[in-house]
Length: 395
Image 1 (cartoon, rainbow, N blue to C red):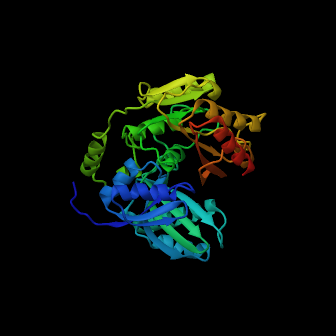
Image 2: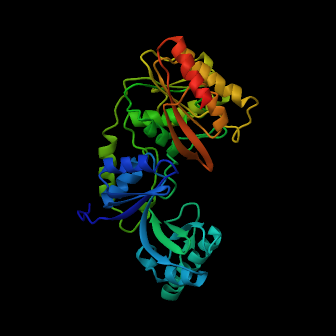
Image 3: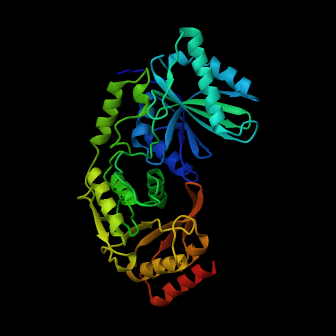
């Protein structure tokens, strides 16, 4: 195990709206010089922190280690600058690599073209120096390279994650329109739930949200079920350090004192959810119910409900307004004393929940701009509930 504590700049990628959540997670891990960016957070750390970030962060998609930045006004300048990088320090001729390119604005408009030019520069450099070149493998490369171009500013980084970190490794199958694991975890963190009360998802689909809640509550690392990370194929991979980090994190796994419940009206969804719980070894920790939300009776003592109902743009729903009205009715009738969070991109339907949200955040589910709204379900008198409902509809 290396004892070198050299620090370097790292970038953690996330989805829009979760930047502060990710920054908070990084601060808890001990990251320094944290800087919020668009769909990303930059920070300083050492090798140990880079490994921990991949294994423990719940709201990160990728952890990038920057190599260089430069100005590229045309494809020849891009090629020349990529060629200058000492790629043999990171890659052998018999190994494989892949390029992930993101471009916006300016001279370059096609990410695939950028990938081709980068590949050509790397391959040509190896041919010129060693008479042989590494191959491209987009599925399971030894080195994944990230190129980001905004206007004429180009950043090149090594991807220490490999597969996106949302691929936790527990999801066996999915139902239609599943929520991304990183977004699910980010929403739970955004809600402020501290695993100190019951947790429910009454539209659980393939159970991603309840699984992420259980992993959080039981201190199961986000990457616990993954077999591999990109940094494991790097030349400087410190296996002893990695095993130490993993062992220390896994030793913190513990039981949870409250109930986590997922329910759905769809028998198919519940069957898929059950398979995913089995794969995550959480079938004894999460209760599944095949019931529509209006028939669910929550455990006493209050808790937090988080649901991802159908959106008009995403799933066919003959009466989307009626669905959201029924969500509000169920909350008011059955969930007094609870805090409910709803994510939706259908802002009109969301108003028909009929309650005034006490908090609202803007987040993105893929390309869809969404509202993540909190409703406090009072245990007060019926007239108080009606007043809150009236205020919600007027908003």
